[in-house]
Length: 144
Figure 1 (cartoon, rainbow, N blue to C red):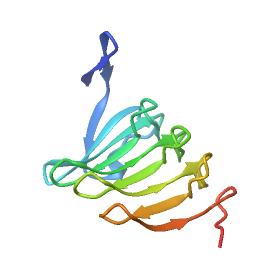
Figure 2 (cartoon, one colour; figure 1 turned 120 degrees about the horizontal axis):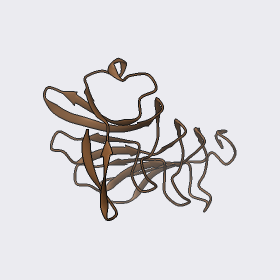
Figure 3 (spheres, one colour; figure 1 turned 90 degrees about the horizontal axis):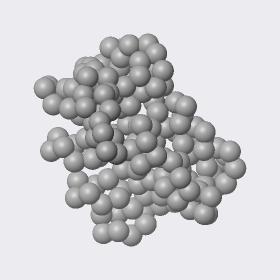
């Protein structure tokens, strides 16, 4: 159990540390810290056994680099990848310097272009220029 600030009070959150996905209890609700060699490599939030964002601005799964910086973040709704809001991708990866490396837009578990017209998958080079874009204009179907 951990205490987290919640507006003007605190909320108690059930937490468990695991070394493998199989150690996560069925129908678990709370925070899971994935541990390798004594260090946290990822943090996931579950609701009734499915990945779920604990809040609109907090991703359900965050993968960390060896130095503790965010490597990847993923947003889930009802256990499926889903953009948390229009214009913000469900999956975002970062370079070691913290700059955006790639983003992927999803609607209810399927890749789909963003509501504002951004491609479903976009990747950048370290210098900030776009490396590639892939479009999925309708319900997970790739636009060739």
